[in-house]
Picture 1 (tube, rainbow over the protein chains, first blue to last red):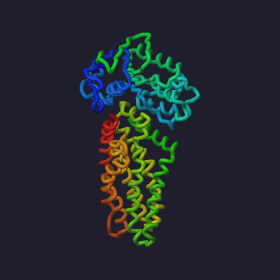
Picture 2 (cartoon, rainbow over the protein chains, first blue to last red):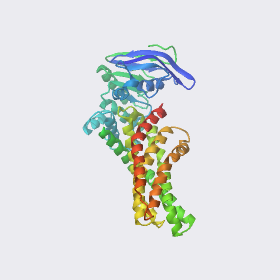
Picture 3 (cartoon, rainbow over the protein chains, first blue to last red):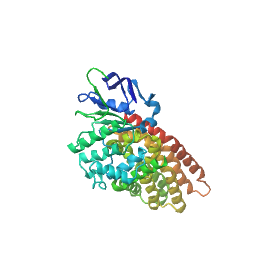
Picture 4 (spheres, rainbow over the protein chains, first blue to last red):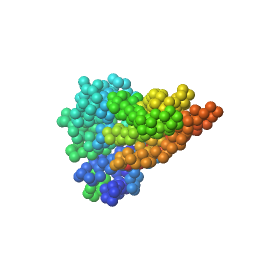
Length: 209
Length: 223
């Protein structure tokens, strides 16, 4: 589904990676690893189209993502370092906005069910600024349950989560990959899948596929 | 499409209602700036009547400027702007929704408070109506133009000052014709229609050109 061809990115004067190529078929998880500052987030932002790479091409179903633009964005769910939720809105309101933006027509009942599944039943009417770090992250992660996007790009999704939430997130990722989705993820911990394939990419050393 | 527009508009207005200080700051800034002039220049009616339109309009410019910095900055800080860029919706539409919300919260209140301000400058009935109408047509242009500057200076250190330097010169035509309409309305034989036609033209041009320009600027700022 996702093809990356000789990708190079620089931040200032520093070359983060050059000649990076890989393909990500449906039903695969790409685990990007590397030490701090090796360019994991840069790679993920480039894959989303938020950042223009210096060289190389990124194709989605055979077409460059720069040409697909909004059509690509509709098939993509990006979860960055920032949670992307408004502190003054409640969990329910945040997810309503997110669902409208992603064009996932879902009723409030679906959102409440998603919040319950992520372990926030009873917190849906509280402004998210009253929630803990981990709970905020859970609100943001509820989007994964609601979304129908085939490609997930997750940047360090496991930070600030407790063991229950980590297990749930691993299950969600495994389900998504099993359902012929594709996932690109950075994390410092190991990820297990029940079905599907895991590719590993280590940045900061030899570019590999 | 329209659903997304309403969704963002409603979101921004809800957010502002939960954090009213931002909206009230703009309004009180406008009131205070306008009220300072009569205290400074004295209470001579003729002088105040001449100064009034210009002072009210300059204050409106500055007040609109004040809230601009927060237009995209809050969404940038918590990552919601990133999500909007990746939403797969036309970004100009989302920008337009945010600008409309900005105007409803900072421009529209000025229209309604203007008659009160006009009293301090001994403006007569017609002039007050013309002032309200010119603010109603002119302040959306300020919000639209300002959005381009806010998008360009997003994430920069000291962006606020830079934003004023970038955008205030662009506000000049609106100031000239907005204040001009009010001044002219005091003269019996003069007609305010050309002023409103020009302000309307500015509004239409800004409505068409500003959202795509701001959207492009946002994409650059987010890199």
